[in-house]
Length: 198
Image (cartoon, rainbow, N blue to C red; front, top):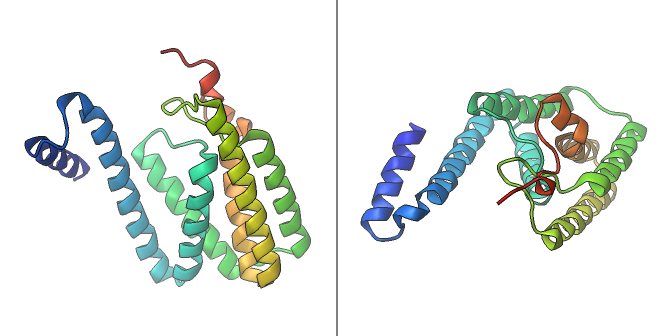
């Protein structure tokens, strides 16, 4: 289904002079990413509705996506793995929050550890998308630290058990995704901009 959507869209763009032949790989990558994002989002929200965690899942997805937009991190190597991890992360964490509670001391420890991880390692690139621009890497790090600080402050101001846990889960997930050990465990190269060759 994805190939049908992507091929049909590219053919339409070429016919209407919106895409040149040399730009097809870029358009293909973008369309595949959009298709994947849309189908996974719909799938996760659909299942979370039946699990009774729609609100929690939606908030986790929203906050995690915003943070990940600046910190990046490891990606699954295959679409099937991506589906498994996406469902596991969003549904698993929202169900965990629904049925269990963390002690506040544990939440604060997660906040501290995650902030430290992001300070040390954000943003983390991938072999397919090395972060070559040093200025952009520094900017992304600063923005990600600001976002994390705001998340923590909002959770303290709102002072709601579920929101504490949501922020804790979001920060912990992203800390794991940018950790060099995670890259090593999955045999993915880290700091790819250092070894990138044009």
